[in-house]
Length: 434
Image 1 (cartoon, helix red, strand yellow):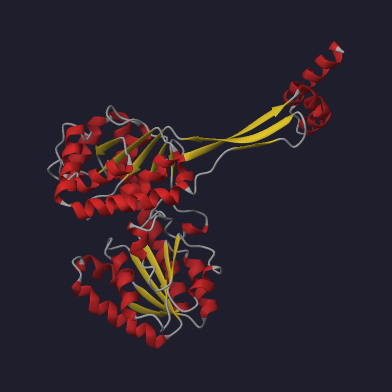
Image 2 (cartoon, helix red, strand yellow):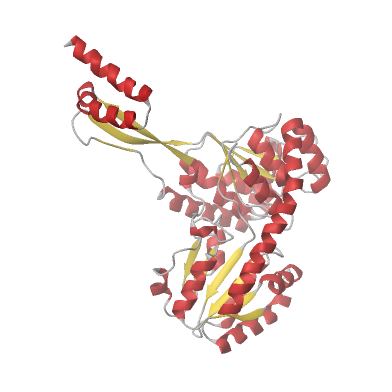
């Protein structure tokens, strides 16, 4: 894990961004080919890509009720502690998300005028749940429950099947606990295309949410506009700001918890203490061999793991706001005071005992978060992502006539005589009748 000074890190970050952009452009040709094939050939292309990429030869993409129920009963009876943990986590998520649900409103600025906002849930949402290197029942809970709380009519999940054509029973159990309506055995860019345009098996979604690999992220980018998306999620990120009051073992463990997601995950420690940076570095090296996914973690840490030494707290906060990390852990003595200085972060974990996995699994706030610096303008996935707003406007005859000339004046200034006429005809009709 590299130890860098602030200035060196900033220069390296520019070069890394350029390399990332080049990699994304190279993916686009493959992704667009998959999207076109699914648009043109529907299920036929979906089956072919599932066989090619997931090694699963399927006759149906839909998880049957029988498969689903067997998986649920199996986990409930054979893994009762896990079943209980998922149930408790789901309730925490529901409680949090219910508090974020917006209500419509109406008000009357004066007699005869009524203005408002109508909030309506989306009709159908597709939730992408990653597979491959790991199983993610927590993502099922985090992404499905806000949609259900919002009142979405139909929530469908797509997730890559295993080579034998099955879905991990724990994922299916989480889907039932969360309240999903259907689960489909399809992943990658082909799943995004199927949700965006529909196939014989998959219904077209109004919105696609959920994290995935680089192919999924680029596919979401390309279908955006034909369908809504939550965000274009990149590799997982963590940034921990710590001082010498925090045990280096805590910081190292939290950094490695994200490094185990994938080789391209980014783990960053920010500190103002050079001696402390070395302690964290040594602790990272000590812990890596102890973890099951050590090979993935090692590559992630060697490629993207960094400890950055800043001159003081102000420079550290400036750096954090520049990075705009997905997960930010403020672990030192001044954590509570530092929160107010943070402008850009997906989720903020405060204090040495608010470890990032709390957010991943249990606390309640969503773990589907903006990455790649997009926390500068994006928010965590939430109920608000599954609702749309309509403005409502009601003017009585009297109030329209009061403001008719004002509206006509603006319309004619823009050269839109049809707009002006729509108002004038009502005014003149009233004048004639009087």
